[in-house]
Image (cartoon, rainbow, N blue to C red; front, side):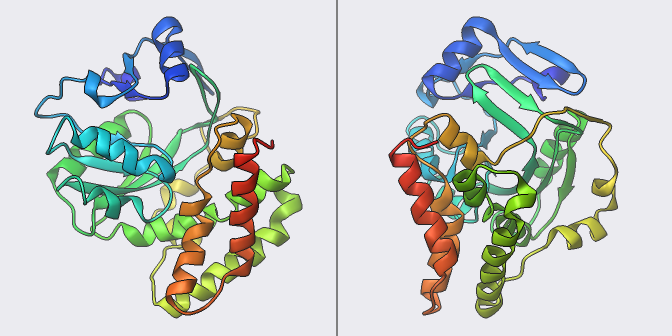
Length: 289
């Protein structure tokens, strides 16, 4: 989306995806049509000559965060890192490698199942809440937010981003259920409600503030407007997509696993989310769709 408005974009990705993009361009399928984008792509940051005004959008799954940061730190020392990721642990990890870290709450309905092709189901394509980590705002956030808005996204900036990311994590505990059951959302809603209630109880005991979807809609009414366009395709969770691509790993350690981790710190258990974590990880390692 940024490339479509003329921004200089360079992609870092897995070899198959990078090869497809470099050989056949990136095919971005949207409600307004299929856009064939000639964007340079590389398999690692060691293939990049970083400039003083570059920023990095870290979009990898949580289990790949540390490896990506180590590779970046080997070639650059002070690039700003924007964590466009689910979960609440990535920003803390990033601060161990870089001094300027930004948290981003991400809600984007997209599918990536085929190398070189991304399906963005909605117009606007998604929304972001951005803030400095652990707190605050700065001029760079406003620059990035303006560019993302120009690219069609809904963007909110905040000096306190992590409650929004905890709120998004509440929704993401459903990812494992979608991936494990492989059925329509309305058929798994009862399971989702139970897993989320377990998480709510733990957040309350921990005294952690989180922003629900309902609260976000009240403070940001723009996001409740009907989309301008919508593809007739079902968007599945990123965890389901990882299993569908036989990737071998899933992000649930940073989703349901975060619930389990927090419960243990409090001296409690989270049996529902622990079970979802275990089954999803077993399915990933056995390449079970």
